[in-house]
Length: 459
Image 1: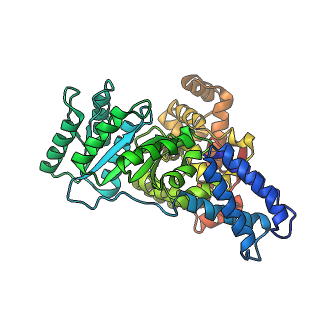
Image 2: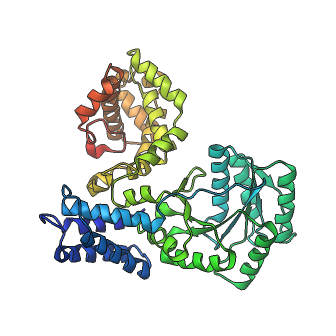
Image 3: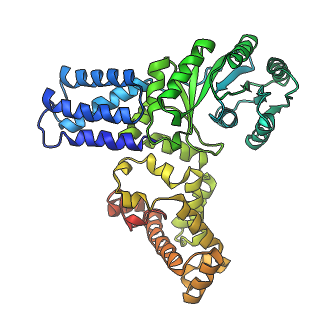
């Protein structure tokens, strides 16, 4: 997300290279670049105009920190304004109500609403310890109820069985009654989507809203629709009094216009953002972290939080003890590290959150992909238990057999083993006293020879 916008904003900063101070003259060239970057990102025109005015006023109307270069000063001002534009801070769900707290989900057809219901239910169960029930009041779309039932089983929450022979309002009322009797903390109601806003949809969902009196009414919208997402959200808000927005499919949106337009046009906060198709791919929306990502400064806080949730800590501790005892890092350990990366959304998702990764050359970016991670996993799976534990025994004939078994070429097996050797050396340094500090010094921060597989451009 935001790749195009990030590139164009960097170009705007580059126009200030060699300048000693921010002046009205040199700012105009940069602001034109910023304006074009936002328009190309499909940000709504009124939002762009206001944003440029605010940045210009701040750049010229106040004292800029003297130790900042003009480009750095512009980045700081743009970052502050991006945070302001997207809502300053994360606004979590307000579930302070007599249980069950009702969450009503609205949205157009194809926005990923039903999948988002499952993701949100999983998030509330795992991170907030809530007893969650989900129910589908979508009586129009074939298999909508069955889809939610399967999702509920997958994310391990309670499903209220409904039927398209009932009315949407009756389903919602019965589900609320069942949730109360079952001692649920949260009831999430999925509603029918349409291909466009129409009177029938609005009348039905307004009726549901009156009967349920939900504490949260969330509009689920596809980020790839750009500024149209904000306009549609505004139309729904007039009918329903939304409490927030969930942006879906943000991982496929290289522009980011929806995220930058919604708060300004609707006054409603983006509460969550969907960054993938898996049931874990729903993140709380933090404006300050998103602004850092847009400007290529990464999002280390989110990366750390994700690691806390998804990394197998027992496995990590086991590896740590093994290294401290001087036992070798083998291909079984290597495979576990790969799977950990996959659990955290893959290499691309991790790089998106690391500072400075946006400035990587395109040639290197092209080598960072999760297909290579899966290929490495297939190669290791084609080895015998002895080969995984004692990689030194893998000779030429064994490499040919492993290549045949994994559907790869011998060169690819050789490349993987080279990457493993680099990782092995890195882990050996980590196992020594003070090894982590020494390893980081030898790597020079980022860009050493021991980067994870799939990042061969660093080797």
